[in-house]
Length: 128
Image (tube, rainbow, N blue to C red; front, side, top):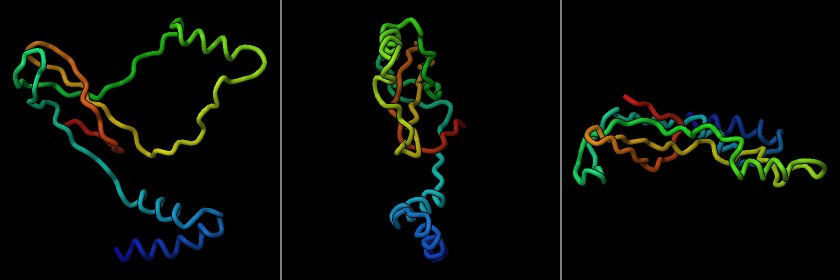
């Protein structure tokens, strides 16, 4: 802990010159010190709503599918952007969060029913 305080005192001078607040200085130092990694087994035994019993499930990480260019919302957004006036809503350039929520995809080995388990915020998810 004393090493962290020494880093904080030394870095506060650098941040004072850069124009950032001391709160941002502490936050960035803490973020650099903490590494969040979660190991998740490839198979877990949990409740299957289709079988109505506990079964073994294979675990995977949910990945969003490819966006369809001909979907109604995509076509509407493209039409709104067309011509003068630019973007319909402002593009997000700076992100407040440093991590993303990882959603787990559980597939029952007996019936093949697939469901998603709400994720938690973490930097790295490792399937073991």
